[in-house]
Amino acid sequence: MTFKNLILLISCLSMGACSSMPIAYITNQGSDTISVVNIKKKKVMQEIPVGKGPVGIAISLKQSYAFITNANDGSVNVLDLHQNQIIKTIKVGGTPVGITKSTNEDYIYVSDWFNSEILMVEIKSLTVIKKMSTGKSPSGMICDTKGKYLFISNRDENTLEIYSQSDLDLIKKIKVGHHPYGIFVRENLLFVVNVLDDSITIIDTDSFATETIKVGDHPYGVVSDMKNQFAFVTNTQDDNISVIDLKIKKEIRKIKVGGNPEGIDIDERDNLLVTSNWRSDSISIIDLAKQEYLYEIKTGKQSRSFGQFIKID
Image 1 (cartoon, rainbow, N blue to C red):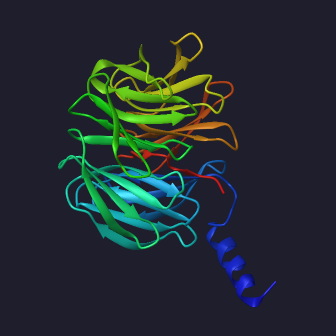
Image 2 (cartoon, one colour; image 1 turned 180 degrees about the vertical axis):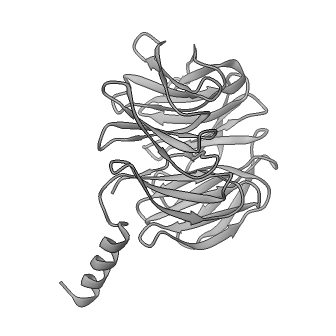
């Protein structure tokens, strides 16, 4: 081992950033910070100041960056995951909310809710290289694993747009429920949360066929498990998660969590489900196999983490 590599290793160990333990990066809109949480140790390792009103988050393992949208000051922070420090602030203007990475992790897409635009950021240069108009009030975004599609929910238009990742051409626009917000994709199933309909729309990305399933009060975020057997939806006004059996297409139970659960993600290494809770300033941890609540960890004020927020090396 060279002296340089030894110093890097010591630095990484001291920061905890090179650990293979799953880490949750939680945006706290009320305290303008990111909570860096070791899920298994039930501990906040660090509170990192960011811009004003942080909401969305996307993690690029390829570059070891996390990107945070700050809705109240029109910016995107770039967080170096090795150092757990902000290394750049990208001014994008408007009201950046949703954010996601391209499949090849060469680009980041940012939704400007107020101006109904999507901004494309090149990760190599950390600059905005393209803007395009979308439907009204773009919110949730995600890319498929094949590098084919970028999906965008348009909250005030009640639509889901599908763009080509290669050239950002619009491929299809699909009518969904009232106020679509959080979205998630696994294999050929795209999940869209409809906030004011208390439902989710499931779209087959091969045929574009749709179906709707009722959930709890004011749903916000959604994920599915690794085998697409169950979907999990945060219900902000019920303080719980709807568990949907994707075989019978029906909600089968609710799991109580913290107050106003919003963001949701899966620790696939330890088979844990994590929600960020806006009202209780915390995250809740659920055993995914047993579908049972385990414990809660206090974070910053008004935790949101809109996007995929768990880092697993």
